[in-house]
Amino acid sequence: MTRFDFSDYFLRHTRARTFHGETCCRMASFFAQHGRGYISGRPLEKGHRHMHHRNRRHYGGLDTASNTFYEHKGYHRLIHSNDTAEIRKLVVELSVTEEELRQIDQLRFEAHMRPLPPETVRLSAS
Image 1 (cartoon, rainbow, N blue to C red):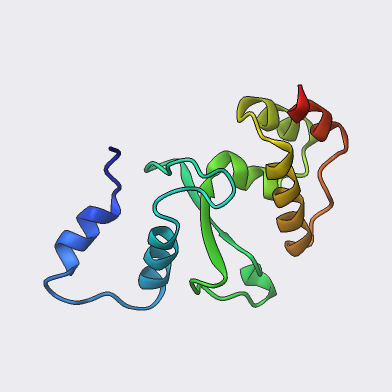
Image 2 (cartoon, rainbow, N blue to C red):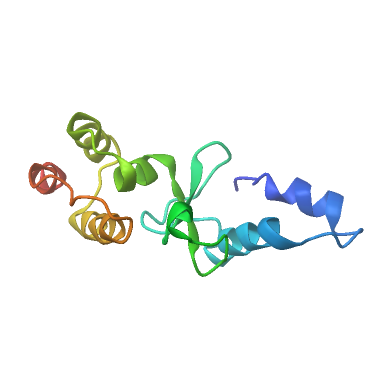
């Protein structure tokens, strides 16, 4: 089983009971997902997980558990990238399914991004 880096944080701070604010919300999001990606369901290892804000921070989104989730960094790039070549590469590299592409498109819409290029759906099917 993969050991997540939050365990060290717990060991250091549980005794002092210093969980608060932003850190607590981030941990709540991570543990609510059982250490797995929101879209992919893949285990999220240290260095490969990114936090996504449903309502972007510069649009007033908060660092709350209801506004955030963790995802594999490649899937997070798919939500935010406008580079068609990068999108194509990630879809093939991550073996993204059609259902995952639908979820990514919905998150792109929420993030005020253009939908994924239509050819990415064909790439996921092959």
